[in-house]
Length: 224
Image (cartoon, rainbow, N blue to C red):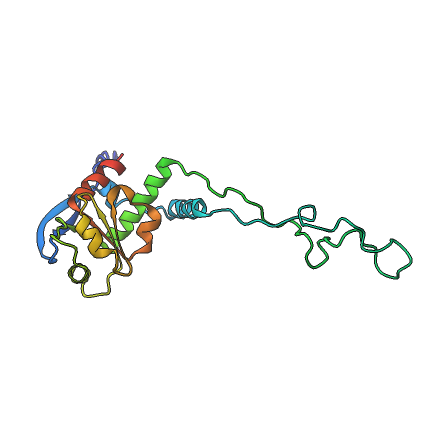
């Protein structure tokens, strides 16, 4: 018996729908997110590698110790070689003595290393997917404040998150100086430009809040 041919595999991903809300947490519209960016495969090993590189690049590498040749003093032999009943000693700056040099101690060095751009982008897609799947990704139509008001901004964020203490990273495509000034004194809240979004910063906060312009930017940058 001849089996029928298998149907062709679908090459288009299932659309990812998210509600776009305003600053009062009211639904404005629905949007189909690019599933390749916001609902793809989570590659935790790439996220781990990018975070390691980020932390390594932040290290100053200025720790330094002195070897026995760099410690001041110790040029004279403390006592004669034989006849004193004590162990032989050639310098008071021996690593065995207090105040002496350090053996194999740290020296200034560069800890930084680079990660390929494809790896960084794949890791960021993994973080965005995780935030979306955990319902910790919010898309706001637009953030706008006439004047900086920390109390007002705190109430807005608390309303968006559902009454919890806000722990959120706001990545804005339409930059607002008033929004940044309003949120900079709120603990566990940070406002950045969407171009500055990276894996490490996104993982520091419970929620990631984007505006529509930021979504457009991320889809254009991360989609292959």
